[in-house]
Image 1 (cartoon, rainbow, N blue to C red):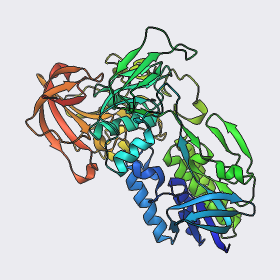
Image 2 (tube, helix red, strand yellow; image 1 turned 120 degrees about the vertical axis):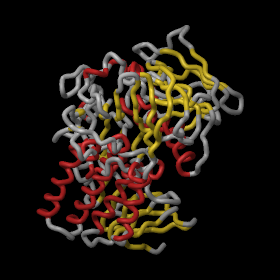
Image 3 (cartoon, rainbow, N blue to C red; image 1 turned 135 degrees about the horizontal axis):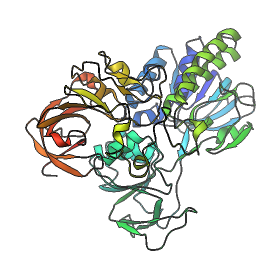
Image 4 (cartoon, one colour; image 1 turned 180 degrees about the vertical axis):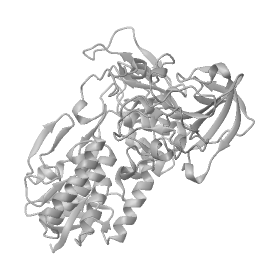
Length: 525
């Protein structure tokens, strides 16, 4: 078999792989990326939600748009991307075998980066092999790539960020999400993600898990039950739902098989076996690097920075840049990565029970149990204020790395400060001009514009469902818990290019409900 030669081989065209390829190519390296899929971008093209972080992390940009940006950058740098190319083996001396169009190629690289990502975990329960039991990633692929509804009535197992985000996207696709279930005693993902689900009326069942999926040749129902502190079912707590789909989002496992095959040193972590590598992804074998989820499960924003760090490390390894330049760039990227690894959900806090924010404000227990901040808890957070004129009310109550709301407001109505994880503050002395940019820019859809009058109030909320309400429509306003509060009338609908597909819907409600009304439902629903 003829041996082909490549200067730098990247295995995986996801956020980490493409970012590494771009960084390396910017230093003059000829990069070849192999990916087994028909299109590059990895998970990015499934992600239609807006990213968290800051401007440097591509915050408030939707995942698939980031994927397009990375692909354009890779093309401009001359990166070769080979699709439908399955790397079957990684061997000594940086050699790989790759299947392309039913033909096996034997390729040797001067350096190799493994950025193969992760695979979905599954939970075994009675009936778990029935058609209709799918992973959350599969649901995203069906909806956002192939425009197919995964099902009509769906139960979601898992309340981490993946379960929360995919549940919201299921609603956007027209599915009926009957419940979110998790064996853990509290919600695992960002509170803002949970809140935007709770205000639509979807219930959360914590300390519950699936007992049985029902059906003969496909799912027709599901029974869940409460579990004790040892995760054993509590008799008599069963609850039944008529569903045709069960969606599972219970974590990911790094796909490190190629690295193991080559004898790379591995370590056991809470997220599975991952390569034992340095900050730039250099493994125990010189010239073999790893980045992204294969090296440890994190968000795509982190994976892109890790990829860049591996790219500069490869440039130094191959002699395209100096150690000094590499260290300077590594330090810059490490600072950016560290800013994403702060706050309540930082790796250092995994497994810890956080009881108060960085500002010493007690965490909302209701948020952790039910997905929404209770009405009697919300006023203790700095984003909640009363003001006669229109003003932003910010219901972001956890320290997460995100600050696009601060830069979106040019009138100084919102302040976060230097620390990206600080809770947003609604500045009472500022003058809001009702532009709505803060509402549209918030990745967690946690900002509302409120205008208080003597007899009524106007609440402007983010809305990402079709069809959009129209001015003059009458329906009901829902509270943070998804329960009906009062009648509501739509008085304005704004949808402009600058909002990036997040419409701003303004509803008129009685004055008594202006602090509680957070979602609109049409009268005939």
